[in-house]
Length: 279
Image: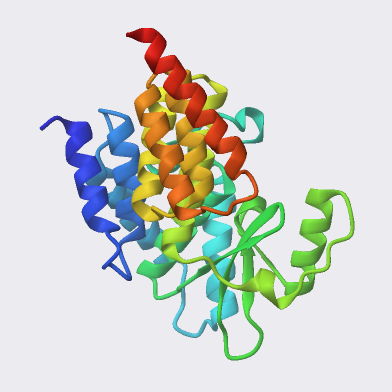
């Protein structure tokens, strides 16, 4: 079994449907390790441990939770300089946790993982809040919940300021109902990370890596129709028509009365025609 297969199997076992909870950092690092032969999972885990110890040196027993969170955000966002890689935002490395730890640059979802993992080692536990066009992390407190913005160097923000961030990102007024503040599960977070990774690889026309990302989305959520259709398209682009048909037929089995069911059936027919022409 080669290294890619080893890490695919490790990932599959980690996130299998019977697992209601799992090690998020391991999941992210197994994704990175499958895609690159130079990733060292243990080394990256040690980096998270070391970051936590450095933050611990700045914590005092008298600090309340907001002060501890401010210290965490200040150390990671300002001292260490973890921030969004706006100069090269479509680089897949922005989503691989090992590279984010080394370069201190990445997409907000990957930066959030760093904050969550370092915070957890210090007894500070975060939830991912996936707002429209903006992702923040939240920790419950005795009073109001506290939000941190990894995009802006771990700045502490209020719930009202979350609304201003989404309006700035979208360019129009946004009403944030309670529904928007429901936390993502670990499974949803990895689905989002892999979906972004899939899109970045497609932009580079690296369909083998994009398909690998889609495969792992399917491990996390086998009923995700959009992923099945996107993977079918990628199989089509790589002339793997039989696999494309398989994914589209699975999509129809799961969604027999979908709005696009007729269109999908037509695509399946065309794919069968392509297969026939090859014989």
